[in-house]
Length: 262
Image (cartoon, rainbow, N blue to C red; front, side):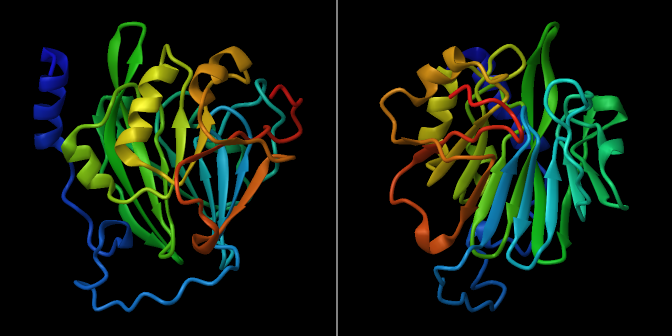
């Protein structure tokens, strides 16, 4: 292990937040005296992609979660009224919550304008949400960032934010099981395709949806090369526990109202 990796591992061992109770993503069912129901073939969630790191996840019961809302200019701006929004980085490409309608709960992974990590561990309707501290790269070196986990009871979705490195053992434990990973591949502020593929080997999701590559097919190509890849029509994906593939499948979504660059 290189010296930076060793330092990262040591730092995360100290800084990782206490494991939140109530997460089925981390095999807590027995401890919670929770009997897992048989998984039906019906949809457990719909994932919509609006470009960059901006998604909306809608659960079976209608709970709407927006991730890293994006300021206008890069993609077509949708009209959304979520119950909750998560922010993994304090930058207009990730924290433009003023575009959201209604009165959503805003969960920020960072405090003090990005200088420190926040702890998020909360139930919102039928979803348990918690965050994991990560690092992103920047023009002046490593910056703090936050990944978010969404425990829907049946499936576990990880939004990896602007992750720029492979995960430590402590981070992997904090995340728990990942069924669906929203994974950055763009480089510069995030990890390049090669590192993203290493992260896939670490977390072994059933579905991985690439993000943060500015619709650039040349960035996308080395990430998907040799991997089972699907390119559905439109900007959304309906997922269910029963229909998850046996091994990792890459799903490349087209941004909402965007051109098909794929």
